[in-house]
Each structure stands twice: as structure tokens, then as C-alpha cells.
Image (cartoon, rainbow, N blue to C red; front, side):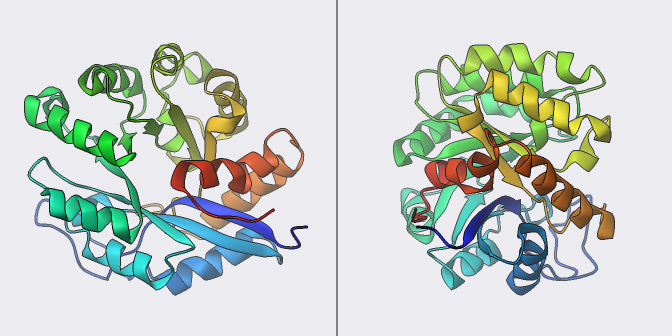
Length: 278
């Protein structure tokens, strides 16, 4: 019988101080380390928490995934990764990513006027290669843009079996639970696995709406397709309130037996291939 309480944080970042690509909108003044993330996870998950995590390549590092890969190698049984790549990546590189524990690619299309490139032939070919590895495609958009982007991505994926993961509640706009993203997601979910990260409520148009959005996503995607993420270290939004929000999520989930175990670890184990004993 399980004595510990696994907690899988499906969205956190690692980076060095002052390092960013030239075009980045943000350049960190501090380092986000694996040790610091482990300390945060312990405060959020409780005294018996057994942390697992997914290192998501941060946008300001572009396609230089070196630090993410190095972090995965430090705790291979406990960590998985989501990379940022472009269509020029070689088959050998993809194989190395897979061996290191990468299980998906991220399309950070927030504020990206050129996002329609994902519909072009090079990107469609990359998606086919990603699908062949069993990886997923993760998307991040501006609030309210998710419906249009998800529809275009689904079309670009065509007949591939690649699952789609929506970052940060799918970033609905001011319509909240009536946002068009839900209708599009319902349709997409009939064609391919669709997952949603319950993460970063502070990025929503209405931060207080996250419980209602979680319930809505459980109805649309299913309670077995939701995963939790901290979004640590909350770049551009740093502060103790962020950890409090994570703890509030855990408290809320403790009152939802239909969702608690699923979001703490069970769904993430299925999506990322963690071996978590029962």
C-alpha cells in the first residue's frame, strides 16, 4: 500500500540567471534550479509528498534545450521534459531527446503574430515525426485565442495520433466557462487525446474562476485528462502568493475525491510514462 503521496508537477521551468535568446521578451535576473523546485514542491504537496515533475522548456531560451536535458538526467525516474523545437531538428536529435525523457514539444504562441506557420508543410512533417515517437503537442496562447489556435493545430495534425495538451486552462478569455475553446476542445477530443493543464490561475482573465474552469474541463475533456502544474518559478509574476495559489489548489482538490488522485499523480503518470507504484 502506498505510504507516500505522489505529486506530479506537470509544468515547471529551469534556467540560469541572465540567460535568454536575443529576441526574448524576458530575461531572468535569478536562476531557477532543480533544488529550489524540489523545495517548493515539498511545501505545496505536504509532508508526505513524493515529487515528480515535468520540465517545460521556457520560451526565452528558444530551442536551446541543453539545461532542460541536463536537469532530466539528474533524476531520470522522477522527471520528464517538454522541448521547444523547430522542423530542422534531426532524427538523431529526436532520438536523444526521447532517451533523455522528453515526451512532447511546446508551441508557445503567446503574442506570436506568425503562429500560422504551424499549418505549413515543414511543421506538419515535424508533427508526424513527433506522433511517431508517441509524444504530444502542447500549446500556449493569449487569453481568448485558444479556440482558433487549437482548431488550426488539429487540422495541421491531420490523421496523426498525436495528443494535444492545453497549457494553463487553455487560456480562456473574458467569457470564462462560455469561451469557444470548450466547444472546439470537445470536437477535437473526439479525434485525438486532448489534455488540459490545471495551472497558473494568475494568468487567467479572472483568477477567481479557476475552480469553475477545472470543473468545466472535467466535463469536456474528462477527469482522466486533467493534470496539475505549478508553473514555477512564475516568471514575470514571482512572489509568495503563487505558492499560496498552488496550496489552495491542493486544498480544493482534497475536497474533490473524483479529482484529487487523478490530478495529483495518476493522470500525469499515464501521459508522461512515470512508474508510480500503488
